[in-house]
Length: 68
Image 1 (cartoon, one colour):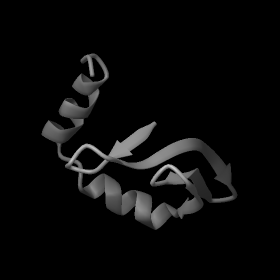
Image 2 (cartoon, one colour):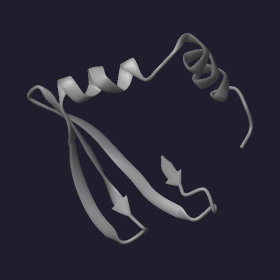
Image 3 (cartoon, helix red, strand yellow):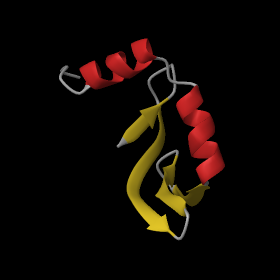
Image 4 (cartoon, helix red, strand yellow):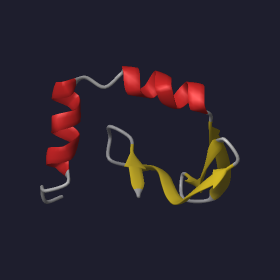
């Protein structure tokens, strides 16, 4: 999965999501070259879910069926 800047340049490539105890490890490369492993902790995952409204959730589900 790739994440992009508003100007269209590649920001991060996520290569793996792995559970590690109570955390989720996100592995990838930033700017196409610098490897990085980040941790998503349970309290931060809950905080992220609070950002989602029903409208945003429906938009996210709809994205799965659109072409790039």
